[in-house]
Image: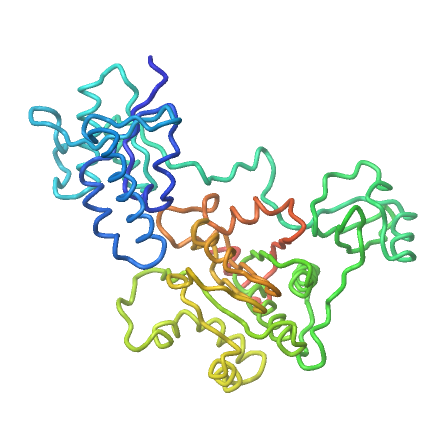
Length: 436
């Protein structure tokens, strides 16, 4: 069989990544006509969805100068063709039992049409839509996800941000006496990444906690939030997180963990501490607006009013730290706390800011790229979330933006990561996270 494939690309792929249309070298890309209609409905949307729809439309319009789209246009320097397809009369239509008015079913009809017209070719549907992949499989049509951003851990666990080491008593003693130890002095030491934390234990029970920086394992610093904020870390993972949050040399921090593990609370307290110490001028909070369960529909009021339900976790943490929310309201009125909806963040620059991205697992990598590239001088960005609780369609635990950022930045000295695995909210909340 010819190794060159005909790939039927769904709308979800083109909206997820505008550059997906360039990502299939050596193959023939087919865009069903209904996809153009669906893209047209998104072109006026704010944020990345609208931008992606407009980009694909403009690109296809440019291809018209190279040839007719219904006859396949060869893409220069790519060994790829792109064509727009509609199934002809007399060829397979939407299968019985499926609604012919729905776009997904018409995409299936296009794939069936291609299978009959080109039986010697491998026809495959590429879609981020799980249900469409299931439908295709039930009809004998090969289908797969768009894997460009999927993480491959290659027979290892996901990155937690810390590593357990077995050390000799002499190494542990040297660590406490000198304040650091050379990694080269540790026998059979695994690869350690910049800003990765170390939990060391000797055979006689001596232990230490440290962080890897420039070839050395150093003592933890920045564990005090100052006199104004009386908050102490409750376990080693929280110590690691606080050390990163307070480290001015690490502008990108990612924190993951179960509900109630202290991600948002510690981050907010670290940001407030930075405000008091005049390291930052403001705290900027943003998040992906993705509801859990049924959507409540449109919310009344101005932008601040619409964002209030999504900022409730932030208010709860203020109430826990300061007994009421008066202080939060005052800081918001002064502009010390800025609520920035994710859909409207493009074009902004955040200088001297402590930027918090909550529920970052519900953002795509392209949305998080938009945020991280907004970070200016003297600023820090913290991405928070639980990669096992993804509420956004088309992404999962291995393709959400937070998981991808963690994996791609683990070798960089400008970033650090910690996975918090212990719940601190209450005994009931911790138990529910485990058994429900």
